[in-house]
Image 1 (cartoon, helix red, strand yellow):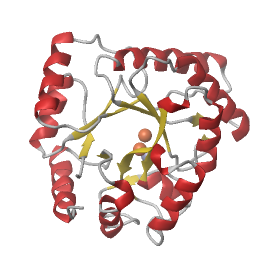
Image 2 (image 1 turned 180 degrees about the horizontal axis):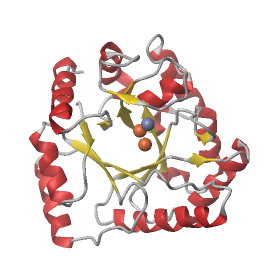
Image 3 (image 1 turned 45 degrees about the vertical axis):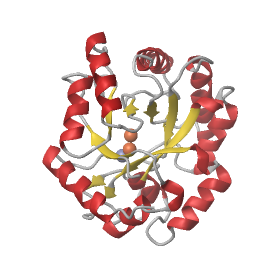
Image 4 (image 1 turned 90 degrees about the vertical axis):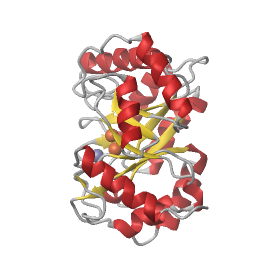
Length: 278
Ligand code: FE
Ligand code: FE
Ligand code: ZN
């Protein structure tokens, strides 16, 4: 089954996002848990959550992929920035339990010239502080383009983080097509090879969600600039290969392309039309 959706604004609440998704033939979506720059989170409206849960169940929604604010940096060189990342993630994970069993995706961080190994250790330390035995959320580490000092530019770096986390059954990976191509994994020429490598290093069972974005820049440019599906250097054929790949069935696919709602509706339609029932 093709589970596909896009990034939506959370400003009007959960039910509104689900209805918006449904209106463009999406059956999953992503949203920022709070202002992407990391301000205070809105209060949870329990009635909105209840209606949302009923609506998504009735309409067979797949797992949602919430996104942490992209300013969180668990491996900053500034203690107060690390503290902010820790407290924000802990608060987000508590709030996520109002909508149980979803995904919470975050950018591992930027090590700010402290070195990838130091960064990896700090990210794992934060995860060890916020993950709890009884939480139902799975936390996803996003594959990164390797811009600046980003950690998570290789499958090895993500695996190192996972290895250092005690409750790592609570962890998965979100595979961002623009980022991996930018990082130097050639999903255009050799998708099978990249997925085999992912399986060998991390384990394909950890691949829980896909961010589907084309790229404005050529292979391996480490720039992280998303493009509309089929209009960038990755191209439509590779996206079709991804949605139809036997190892990537049923996982939620989120578009983060530079679009308004009608553009997302168009991309979802194109991809649904290109999906071959497995
Ligand atoms: Fe992201
Ligand atoms: Fe992404
Ligand atoms: Zn990106």
